[in-house]
Amino acid sequence: MPLYTPEERKRRDATPWTLVQGVLAPVQFLVFLVSLALVLRYLSTGEGYQAATLSIVVKTLVLYLIMVTGSIWEKVVFGRYLFARPFFWEDVFSMLVLALHTAYLVALLFNLLSDRDLMLLALAAYASYVINATQFLLKLRAARLEQARTAGTADAGSVGPAESAA
Image 1 (cartoon, helix red, strand yellow):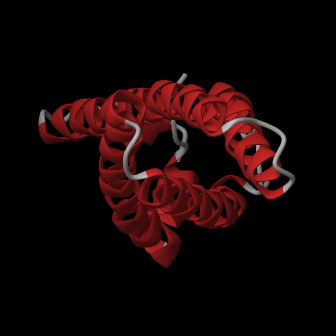
Image 2 (cartoon, one colour):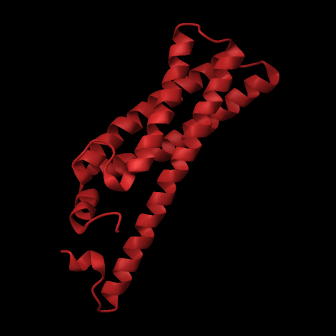
Image 3 (cartoon, one colour):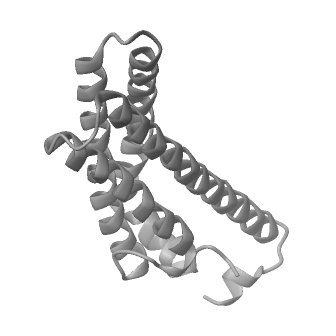
């Protein structure tokens, strides 16, 4: 089953939310890398708690932003805010990512964990983020391969399954 129907592909390519996601994803990854380095520095040296904490909060806020804009993108392209067929499992895992990042904020706000335990919770959130980002990268790669295959069959003069549905 193709990732996008021809209509969904047109909506994906036409919406500015695709560009927003394309910009926010690498920004979030860069924020993640900086934050990860700061968290690991704190855990290994005991120094830089404030910088690590601030970086985790910023990473979480960027995550919220990309989740909200991603939901809007999904609504525009697939007609629903979350759990559209092609991204169902990525969205399911995104809920875990959000839960862990939110748990960090709650624990920080209400002083529920030690500094070290907060950093370990952040690392768990980050591990889930890496898995989720990998899911999305694999999906993006699949979409590009599918589009190349479709373009290749169209160039060869034959009509592939995606075009025959149009």
